[in-house]
Amino acid sequence: MSAHADDCTRYVDAALNYSICLPREWNKTYREIGQRHILGSKRKGGAEISVSASPFGDDEKLKWDSWMNSYVRRIGHDIRSIIETKEIQAGTDATVKLLVFDYSSRIGRMLQRTMLMKYGDKLLVVECRAPVRSFGKYTDMFNTIMSSVDLSGSLEGESVEVLKIAEARPQKQAAIKKDTERKKREEKKAVTAKTLEKKAKPERKPVISEEVKPTRETIKPEEVKPDSKTIKPEEVKPETEAKRLEEMKPDRDKVVDPETQKLIEEELKKIQELEQKGIIEKMEE
Image (tube, rainbow, N blue to C red; front, side):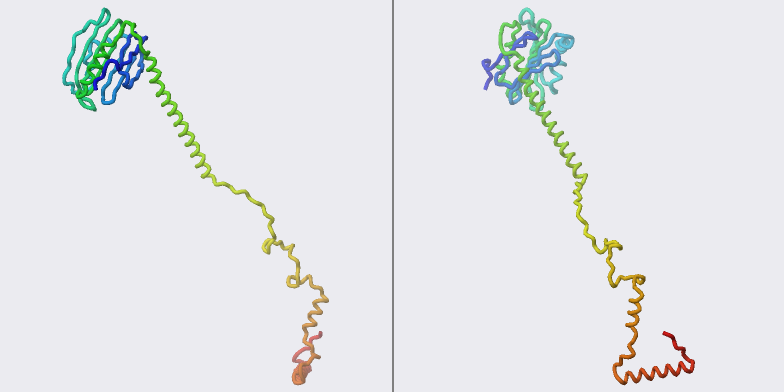
């Protein structure tokens, strides 16, 4: 499909006093680099239009005089052919140069047409390019674009400020999105740091005081109640000890049987004989 002139929209740059048409359905951009204003228009498939305008200073004069270095060699490599026109007078206050050349790019062989226009103290550069295989279907469009330049200011259209605002909007949205993502990362980082700090310090459980019941191990000596088994020797009364010893003596009057009694008497008799002979000494009770 060929691109037609009625598919264009005019944009006016009041600051640099010119206007030009761009394809209505193509993606458009606008930006400013110092005093240089750049309009861009692209279409899927590699077709592109670039329009730049700036005051005619020393840099612009160098580009005008050395267009080969400024507008051909900077674009690509393996330039196969260049067609140059002589300076063409366009009205009373404008001079035009037309350049046509082809070059290699990452998407294939490209064909480009460039128009340099010096008007008053300003320079306008219009570049139209497309792949060689599809350049033919954009020829009418490119002719319309280059011939639509108006320097009189008599043709009205949309201000390039419209494109400037439209260009700034996605940039602002991108900046907001970037700032939001940054804040989320910082919040996530803070939460992670807090979690790690919490894990590093073990939680101390509250100490619940309970009434300690005395056990056998914890009873103090003074708390032990004395019993019959723990009575100290000094605590025993003399009459009690004497009674106990008396009870422990064998009862001589108690005889189990006559034979046992006879043996006891014989033993006592022997003891008496030993006492009489002086062999043993009688102990006084």
